[in-house]
Image (tube, rainbow, N blue to C red; front, side, top):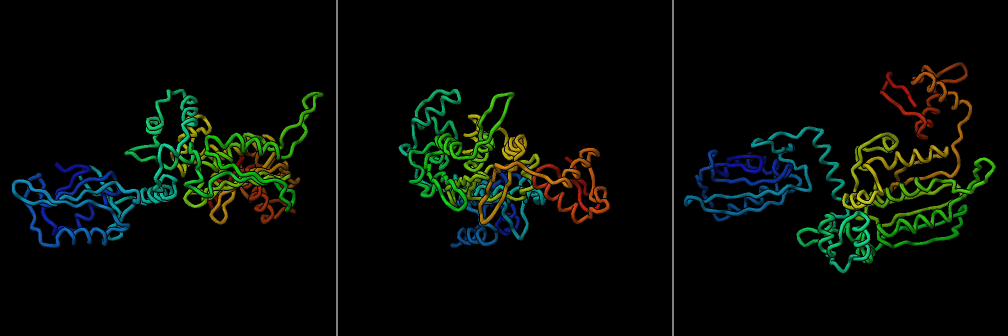
Amino acid sequence: MEDEKTEYKKSLAVIDEILETVVAFANTSGGEVFVGVDDSGNAVGVSLGRNTIENLATTISREIDPRVTVSLKTAESDDKIIVIIAVPMSPLKPHFFKSIAYKRVGKTNLKLSSAELEAMFISRALSLHDVDSLHLSISIDDISQNLLKEYVHEIGKKYKGAADTLRNLGLKDNGKIHPAAVIFFGNNPSRFFPLYGVKCAVFRGNEMLAMRDFPLPVYEVVAPVMNFIKQNIPFGIRFQGVKRYEEPKIPGTAIREALLNALIHADYTLDATVYVRITEDFVEIKNGGVLPPPLTLEELRIPHISKPRNKRIAALCHNIGWIEHWGEGTLKIIREMDIRGLDADFNEKNGYFSVRLSAREISLNERQQNILQKIRDSGSASVSQLVSPGLPGRTVRADLALLVKKGFVKKEGTGRLTHYTL
């Protein structure tokens, strides 16, 4: 009987319906189209000419965008020939036929909604730049068994050999080791990713004082990079009672979170280097790859849903408690910096994403502090409610834009309904 993965067609004459179903299967969970079978599942057969199968393959390739890879074969049932079109679920979805994308629901093909299309486009963009989208010939010898053992013990499991461990961690299937295994546990990740590593540099003005490369796999690289940063960032003085303490001006938790964010979300298919720039005023951590749409820089400062670019690397970090829930990393950075009265700035430029952690306390002028106090007192305020003699709307809007960027207030509503809250 027809179902979500099975479709019957009497003949090749209904080619548009066949193509719609191929698209629906590719956009959903895959399936098979049986041509030469009636709605009851009885074989009625098809007549095949010399080039029928080749022409069908050409039509499927030409009419569906982007192309779908299908398997075509013939079979006999009750002495009748039927054509079977096997369609896998596609990593390139959404697919379109005559500019329409379909999905399979039960035994029906339905048009995808705009929201479903948007979700598929985002998923496709991420999958194409996930390190595991690369086809690499990786062997067990390319993976550090010592790191595997250490990791397995850390998550409270028993080590049962490299192959089984990789399989249990989702890093190996069908005899193939995924690239994430090399990035996380590799003996030499740069063998497969020549630019791989964390490159740290210390500057005073434009003068480079020190530089250090860390080509270690992710599981091994975090601790030495953090030690290097802590040794080179500026220190400040803190008093507790009569005791005097020296401590890093930038909280280590925020730096570590930014580093992990870069290692997890880096686009290893483009540039496998994570860059760390250390100055007297800030620490900047940068990685190749920009935010996936529709996520924006502004949304990083409020609760948001995040889809990690490198899903297996993110899962490995999550297993050992390096990260908590998706989308909370930037919020944790902001919270840690706010406690110290410091600023965290997120930016995208030329295909790179960066986090800049300031070592200097945020300073607001008296006018901006007054605006902040008015919003605090009333709970929320619009521009018109903040305007006063000597304080025109233009100045209020500029100050509010700064307060939003620095994370003091958030903008809600649109048009005349726009207002600002803490």
